[in-house]
Length: 300
Image (cartoon, rainbow, N blue to C red; front, top):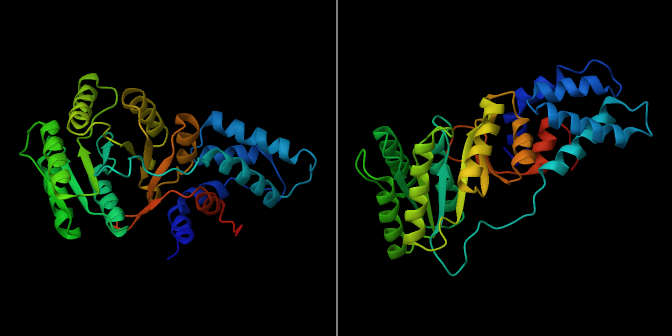
C-alpha cells in the first residue's frame, strides 16, 4: 500500500464525516462549515478556511462542489505547509536525542518503538530509554518492543529516578556509537504543575549529560481526543518549548481536522502521524497526501 493509500484508509472516518454534510452539488458555505466542524477543525479555523474560500470563489458564484473542494484543499494545505528541516542535531555529534512527552494513553511508548524502527530502517543505530519508571508495564512494554525489533533498551527499576535512566542511556549511547536515542517518559496531565516540573528535571539531566540535548522534544497526542489534544499541545509547548508534534490513532477517529488545528494554533511542524497499530504504521507527515486523502481527491 502506497503512502497516499495509507492516508486515505486512515482518514476514511474523517472523510465520511465531511461528505455526510454535503447535499447540494454547488458551492455552499454553510455546508462547508458543517463539514469542517464535523471533522473537528474547530470554529475559529473553520471560519478562516471558509473566508479564504469565499475570496477564491468570489468571481465564480456558481462554483460546483468539486471546485469548492479544490479551494478548500488550497486553503488547508497552505496552513499545513512547514519549511522542510532536518531533525535537529549537529552532524558532528551523536547520538541524536529525542525526548517524547505527553499525557497518559496517547500511545507514547508504542510510538517510541515505531520511531526507533523508522530510524533503524534509515540505517541508524538506535537506542531506547525506558524513562517511564512510574509504570512497570511501560518498562516491560518497551523491552518487548526492543526484543521484537532487535533494538537495545536501557531500563531502570520500577520507581527509579527517570533522570537517572536518561543519564545512563546517554552514557551508553555515546560510548557505543548509537546514532539515535529515544527517551520515553511517563504520561502526565499537562495541568499538573509538579508532574511537569519532573519533566523539566529530566530535560536538565539530559542537557548536563550532553550539552545541547535533547535535540528534539516531541509531544505525542492522540487524534480521537479532538480539541483536548489542542489544549495539551498549548500547555506542553508553553512548558517545554516543543519542537514538533506526533499525532497517533488517526485511523480510529473522525476528528482528523485536529491535525490542521494543532498546526495552525501551535505553529509547530507535525513530524509523524500514526496510521495503524503495526510497527511500520508511523509515517512522516506529508501535507499533500493528507489533504488529498481528506477529500479523496487526486491532484497528482
